[in-house]
Figure 1 (tube, one colour):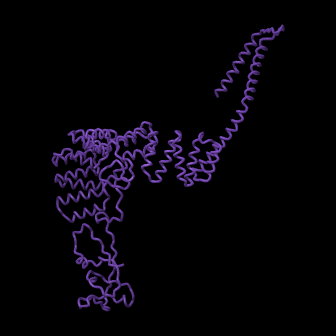
Figure 2 (cartoon, helix red, strand yellow):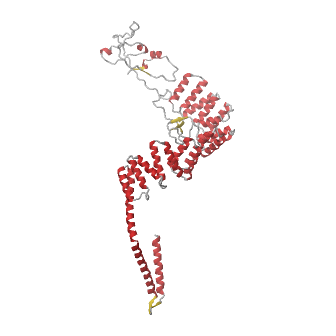
Figure 3 (cartoon, one colour):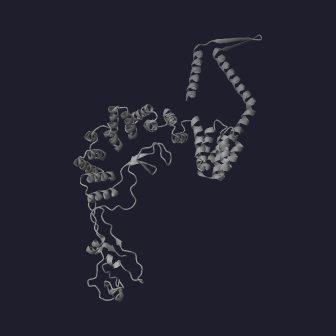
Length: 533
């Protein structure tokens, strides 16, 4: 577009010049070799322009003729290169599609048409073709060759890293990832692998330096970067809590500043402040974290902030937490635990039952059982509450990769991933849970009807020595019908030697809240105690 405008501007200027000369008539006289040439000014101007144009055309022709060998060779070279790039492109597509034969064919074709030192992608295509053919040794050699080329070095390190991961050699993989991270910290795969290595060795300072690179290049969101840094600072504070309390406090406070809602950071920061008798600041940190998300560790540390406090003072502090986060199960449980310590059983029972109504789970029933034992000692009710605790959903815990931990940890013990632990309820127990009468309606128990009149024939002597005899039905031997008589525990006291072995009858499970009944007495009261298959 700019060239067109410039061309139009030049034509416009020339037009104005010729128009100006046409309005001003004149003559131009040229004397040369005794001859005098006289022409008008307009003709002279046109002649000058024509001469200049002719000179330019002649110069262009002479230059084209002089450069024709180079132009022809460049044409064939460009054509050859285009064919090579076409083969390279087809080979890369074939490698991505998993066609190893076509990828190898196009690799050879591209290598003939393009020099490998001019196009490094030929090395990549060759390595990919080797991997598709199963020649991992050849692929590793090609990746190692890439390390000598500064332009291909990162690609070679990536290939060697993946090969080490495939072979399960974690040390070699982390070595290649560390070299790549030193050259280009913005590479996610290199940074993550190196970060796992540093956190696994407990080098929290090195890990903190490493996570700053993606943050500075804005390759990670600000909230995610702050979360990761807070996790590392919390881990550092845990490692230095005994050896260097001041450095641990500095790290914990910075972690809490980055993520005030991160419970482990708030807990360790407040714990270090309490050790230095700064109860007010530590309490504020815990209160801010509690408002964001109530956590039992926060409640435990907050209520025991002053070791010398009386149990009533701890109860008041728990009630203060409850005021900050009303209608939450953790608030009610915190007050219930403090009330149980203070022997305020009515408050403890009320808050525990309120917690169950808000969030029915195992810990609330166990706490209610402790309250029942401390107040009444009623073993029947205690067993009933314990049975409900077994059937209730599990309490939240720190879970990472299937591992359930009571304490937070910075990395997963299975995969080594940073910030893998989450505060959530673990997986439910396997198997069908049987609810008590209070939680579910009664289920109908199948029964087997006894015969109306007991048969008097075919008496089987259970005791050959002459002890008590018991009649059985005659229909089983005469008509073949499946009439079954009631069976009790005495009937199994003795069995004829030639009797066919059968599986024992299944006994219905007693409810856990049953204070206990003798099995023999229960057999006499209810013939529906057994099932026969």
